[in-house]
Amino acid sequence: MQEFATPLNMKNEILSLIAESGFAEDCFVEMLNYTIELFETQGLGADYYGYHNINHELEVTYIALLSANLNNDVLNKFSLEDLKYLYTAALFHDFDPQKSVDKPHEDSVLKFISMDKKLRDLIEQAGLDLEIIKVLILRTTYPWSGQLKENAERQIKECFRKSETAKDNQLYQEHVMRLGWYLSVVDRISGYALGDFSKAMEMAKMNAHALAWRPSLIVRSSVAYFEELLNKETDMCRTVLKSLPKHMRRNFFDTVLSFMGIRQQEIAIQANYSYENLKLVPTIEKMSTREDPQFIKSLYSIFLELPTPLQFNKDKFEESLRDQNVILNTLRVNDCNGEIVGFAKGGPLESYRLRPEIRDENYGLYNTIFLEPLALKMGYWGLKGGSEMRHMFIMQAHSKKYKHLTSFALRDVIRARVSKENAEFVTMFDPERWDYYRIKI
Image (tube, rainbow, N blue to C red; front, side):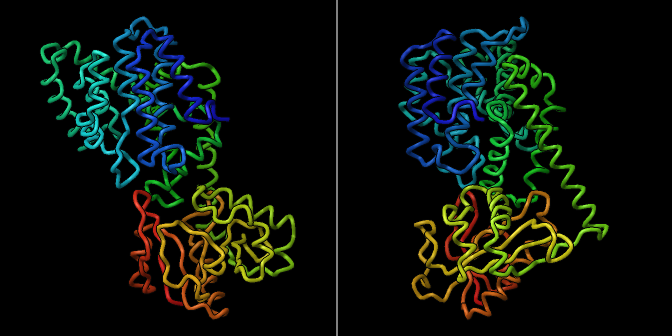
């Protein structure tokens, strides 16, 4: 389970750590309160379904201080000043209130911390150099390669030039860069050290949903992420992990091994599909089957694999399967009696409460069917089974005399359907780019 479930719990743990670290002055406490207030008022609180929300910001701050305080490596000891800089940079490293995508843009973060008068006053009260904080935040740029790295290094050089404490001190600049490297690795480890695999998978889904990734990329990208962290950041990764409590190290490595295990399963499924040893069969289910408790349980477990914002009418799931007005088809392995690995479900638009921003002109006319997001087991995305279920669903809706179908899909997927199916955007959403669209049936 997650170590600290709420921002309030995280806040209390951080307050204990800053007292233990030796800098519990009011300005540092106020920074923490101000961070939480900013994230909540900008819609980036715990309810924001994206990886870079207030929980992430507080987790990074907590692990940065915890690891630094428990670090026993004489060569990598952190001074009190180091801790103050790490704390401040960690608190604000991802604050990008105008984000058009979930991944924060470092330029926007720097602009905010440079322009916000209250934060500047707090930094001044703390006796910290704003330019050093900027350097630490810039060093968390990910990935630290290519054009992103070059841009960050150019800005870092300018920050050092402006800094009264670092401009003529090459050794101190190197020290600050190492602190930044430490923070960047903490940034990438923290969430996975503070919970079990279920938390890690939820984080991966949040990241994928907020970055508009196709579901087939979730596990593949997670494995690549961990391999890069362990292989390219080996020294600093080891430094951070060995300073954390044993159970947190176990959380992290259990997560890495679990993702790698699922990736192996995915590859095996794709190999069987490629060798034609596995067929995916879309199947229209009978009402008698839909009332079977084992069938309902099987579908519900697949439903729970969807990102939370895509779990429509979760509290009425079983009831919806028994509703004759609800269209349902499944995806089975090899034949219509095989293992269920996915399903497509939907009903009259009026049966759903969608996001308040949506104004559907057909709502109340009972001429539109709403297709809930397709649900597939991990490993079966990208094999065209979802597309076949969707086409079968449209045929079923046509037989019931519906004139329109609406649903949510990734923006680039809808754009491809504009020419193929005369799809039209009804409402577009940022940063997730998971948009509401309509087609004529």
